[in-house]
Length: 247
Length: 257
Image (tube, each protein chain N blue to C red):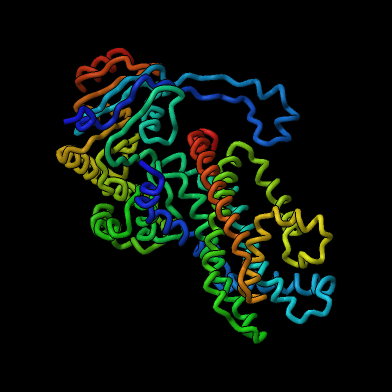
């Protein structure tokens, strides 16, 4: 068995910085007129020399205070952004739930939006057809599924989006702050679904501030502080230490 | 993973994008799909009247002469103007989800091509009404269309990715396309130009595309296959170059938008 066979995500020596502009010139005119002003930018290092290997079937939480680089790391894993140096490699079909409902079109019906949204995740028509009932069932929106999405309440919208995302059958799921979808009943359902996915051996990476969900779902926690990994290990140990230091 | 495999895996996204593009275009207008025909027809009427008075010299088939050029030209300009906007317009999804970004410029060209094929009915309509009929050369229509698509795909890759970093391009393109309209034999004949301009005209790729369609539908003769062959090679090279530019620039899309 090759080493990479049981690795899901490999992050090596990753550095990421963003340019912070004070007044961004977008057009040629602005660039020429305000030549001096463009120099006023700052490089902010968000991640510094991150090394992280996540094995297949692991459920990992990234924790840390705001601005510690959790979401940036997750975006790098998704390949929405790319590192300045170092490499991020993923093995297996990957789905990211960074924000729900990406690609929803308000004028189209819930059913059509399931197709749009699932196709962004790389599913084929046939695969979506096969999952359609399951998705609608999970969202509990059967009576509204042929209404345009703009008539939905925000809760309904989130439920539909989550149902699509959770049913795309990826091997790796990257989830950012979305465990608070809908009412108590639906949240519990989501949790049950995540646990089921964990039992099926999916790899999951969460970014969340809810320590209860971390303890409940994850078997490993990684604490990021100022763009560096401060602690990595057993969930309860890391969370206890994190809570002790930050509160 | 190679690009073809990636695009094949995401074919459903490509399809829904094209569908959304075509259906969404006239969604809230009363006449709906009728505009797909009405628009080029009215445009054609304007050009036929104005340039017919100026340039036609009493040619009764002048409107067909323009028609066979204007419709592919519209395909060309719309796909380029839309390319300039496609990445910015889809910024919301780009910032949130991973998918091969190449899908976006490809679907612009693909949906344009579908629209163009539908509009070709207008050309056929005029040709039949005028009693010119259709000849075996129509079999070469897909060939010219393919070359045009490859050419536009190359331009589309370059334009769509550069506009993200250099927004002025969107406006520059408008002017360039306006000038290009007159630099392409759409409303006049190449022979009407001085000899040195005719040579220059041959450097314009759209000249050969337009000449191709015109040979097929209007003159009903064999298109200049040598010119089209060379253009195909250049277009493939442009698409490969465009793809590498796009591939390089797409890494920063989510941060720039």
